[in-house]
Image (cartoon, rainbow, N blue to C red; front, side):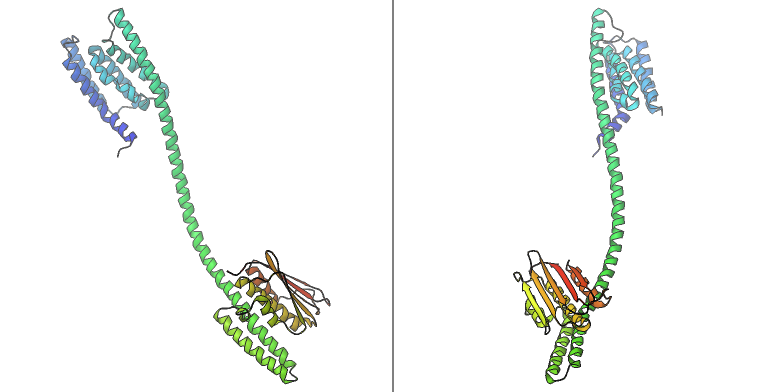
Length: 381
């Protein structure tokens, strides 16, 4: 379907031929009514031919407009019906001329139209002159009104065209940004995949450390103290438990103590002689990852207290609060001035961070060590 602008372009192209043909036909039919002499008829015919030639010449817009307006005015002197051709000036003055000259061109066209409407130029008598003046004023008023509307429409069209152009530029920038984002997303996916592999490696290393390494350390401790069969039995039981834990780590990396027990019950099973366990607050079933992280932190802290601190007393406190759970492990061991860079402390911090928690370590030489983990209280399910 043609747009309004395309329809106007077609009118500018073929409208002059159609209106010239219509005006010429009516003038020929009324040549005797308006008393056209043979000389007038020949002159009008010559002007019609000139108008046809004008339509095919590649003239600039302003020159074409003023020559055509002069032809229309002159032909209307011979027969008022030629004003049908002159009326073109109302339609394309703003199209062919600048804004300043468009009003002047339309007013000149109004002179031709008023003369034709009043019976022809020049007016004959006072009555015809008064009619010409009145019709001119009417045409001039219409020119001013419709000219203002045309300018307003032209301004709106200009603004709309600029808006469309700006939208096209914006869309182009958006398409470019989308292409860049697609490249960045692909790059981020590769980085995220690599980061996920590294994180999974660290997680598996932490699981193996927390299960096999801690279990074997306990076995060595028990065997070193093996002075009676009780220690041997405890060492055997601990070795079997470590083997089960290692197999489960490979299977689903979940602590075996939490399969059937709550977190407080699981903590009771991993504490050693001389360790006091305290649970405060209302015990609630926590998310599996939260309980696993706290249990592993407790295992690592207790293992460090047994292997390195030389502690005689250890206290474990598990506290359930409104929106968080805290786990505190304190011992009276030898302590240290600077935290070790070993895998155990790093693994504890990573476990706490993995569940949006924090881990703090306080220690002084000769005054023991305190490990405090704080994690959000996220209920099971």
